[in-house]
Image (cartoon, rainbow, N blue to C red; front, side):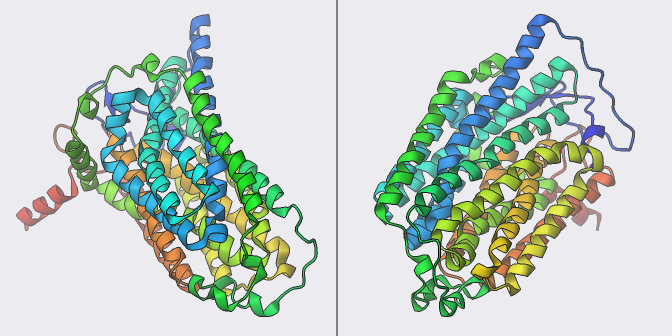
Length: 513
């Protein structure tokens, strides 16, 4: 597709509360192709319009801050699960994302219709608090049920967030006279700047707590280190007798859980008190599923969207997004950082990851406007592939102290590509279909998480690195296929402007032959 700054829509769309969008003609034509710039002249705003503009920006920043508090607690605790709770921790994470998959199919639109976008965010965030509270007594029967509650609430929460930012971004662009796509990408960039910074704040908390009282100098156990890195197998770690893999004292876990629980509860309060209802920006102008589809209808709508040629092609890249996040959270932290340096160093390494992720998240938006989307995606793939190859042959050792941080930092750069640009790509290539598109996004990304977390306790790192390569290659090939189709004029449409689905294309091909 053309560069972000060069894309314009002659038929603008407006987002509803459930994530769906409606164009002025009830159709969503493809974005114009070509190299010519589409210039939009900024409007001179009245005082009331300027106040409304700042109010929209306030909502974007408040939602971003609330998510920052929420994922300061959740991300940091998730990073430690494979080190402090081992089997039951990663099992709970797998269950969590399985519940999220089910939730993606049934819950988001119904919940947004029932509670509206603002209160969907508020209520869903409380589900995360139950999971954090379970850390005070981490057992399978406490972690798994609260993981299910979190997973069921996560899908509507993320859908409501995407809906809110997309709709406010569209209204903001209409108000100030900017390109809607550029504004939406900018808003997602702001959001992910705050979101990725959670790796800093949360891991700073965990590192400070876990490092307290730890000896500065420890004798290196060369025998135990042979079981780290590519040789790390979860079911064989008992043979290593590595003191680095011993969980921290309960008092430190309780201290972390208390801080994280307060942050999670505070996120709900922030949304409830400071965010304007989406009704202010046209939430009542609902169409489609927000008028009252059943759970079965929502499931059919989600799976029907998979017939879209672009959705099929982008599935592998979406799965990769979940796989790569789970790998850095569960496998890199356990097999390399905890095993090579100690559990207390996980937070410090992940801070480095989070800083680079946050900086790049906000930097890639203007960079895409300069160089286009394809070079950014390509850069992310090359960085990931280079790190995977390095992990395949590098044996972690305390003497390579800085390499632990460098690899995490580079992974943060590539993750910023996937998190910001895949979100934006879904909004661009599926105009008028945001509800089903974002539902598929969360569904397939969650399957990537599940696949990776299931592997976490059963498969050795040597095999996981191979799986990472395969997942990355499939994802990149699917993405390039989309860009090629866009370059050639976009997906085929019928006389009414509706996208011809894959099964229809196949049937037409059979009839012609």
